[in-house]
Length: 226
Ligand code: TYD
Image 1 (cartoon, rainbow, N blue to C red):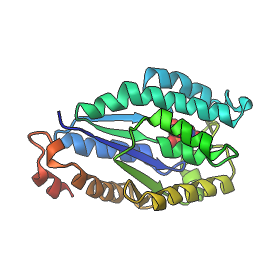
Image 2 (image 1 turned 90 degrees about the vertical axis):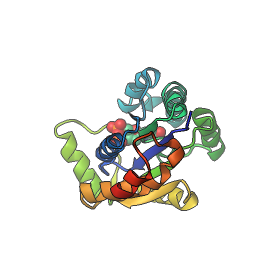
Image 3 (image 1 turned 30 degrees about the horizontal axis):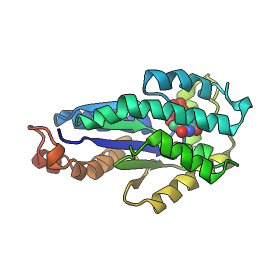
């Protein structure tokens, strides 16, 4: 059975990750690939149960270590029940946020780097993304977009931070991309939705090696799409 592909999308609030996940999923399905779209925190029944605890802020009073452990618990369940089985059977998995969000959001605080590394090792358990797409945007614009999308709803536990916190997160994502250029690609998320989708498709297509392509999705289609 050919191995699939595991692609994660990362970036600050309002960068357009979920829209780009959807557009890439449509394009991949168009060439006959099985695509699994998922997100974190959540993505599997066990992880979705933890999602509400995290995003409502219910875990916040118990401190950052508790939150980091809960993100890791949710990720472990998600990896073992959804992501790994899908990739193993040859699907392309598109995940809206994954380990880099924990590095940036939880790792940005006072938690010891060793603690974060240990949690990551247990949660990811070797399921490192083949490609991580980092959508980079000025946090002012990102927050404006996020507020527009939210309407009257109050910001969640992680959206509510100040501009300087969002700026630090942006720098942290860019630092990860610099440290792991093989895995991470940075895209300018201020451009139009369709221009960005085209750039992302161009980066993804060469990674769909013929060995993982289904019968009607050869390199020929990939070249045309790119
Ligand atoms: P959500 O509303 O799902 O998405 P988004 O902001 O991507 O549109 O919110 C998820 C929030 O959880 C987001 O603010 C980032 C945060 N988060 C972490 O702090 N650590 C993590 O490991 C993950 C996956 C998310």
